[in-house]
Length: 223
Image (cartoon, rainbow, N blue to C red; front, top):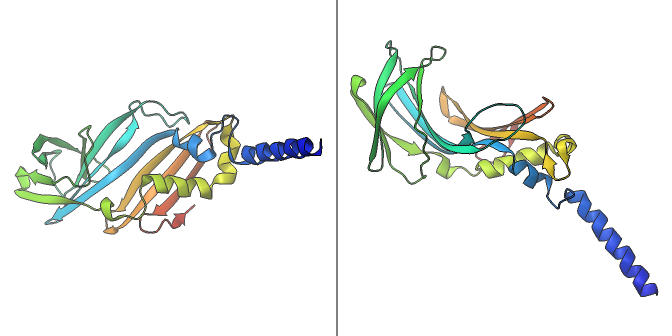
């Protein structure tokens, strides 16, 4: 009889310990948040020549973007951004990714004088990317900087979740996280060596949590 009682008590303890680390359906907080990622960026390519710089960033994000705390279906994206002191309202480009060429016109952002376009495709870190700007008579390669980072988007999310665990746990109910997460890359235009992960969580009740995280060592640079 004593053995039965001991076994019963041990079982209760194991169940109690398990509930400390997982939701009612067995999910952990980390798993719940991972299911609610509305945007993540992955590869970051960069190049410059004659005071003109360009970056190409890819990943997946909501097809119908709304920062409302609810994550919806994701789609691939690949954003080309060019910084140039052109007075024209648009800038023609040719972007070559391995053997495929994409031609088009970049529209100017009136606020920061950059040019941007979404090519709706992802790349690999080993791809060769070359940008040509015919009107400026320029052509240069974009190098993948992210392949050398110690912290990728998944690690950045883990760091963010651990750092904000106490607050995020309040939104983790019955194995479901009531919010959405955006994992972005932030680059300092004045110094391309300063690149960070920006992890932003928007909860359904409007509360926001965010961290700026080093791509080199995972240090949290801003809460």
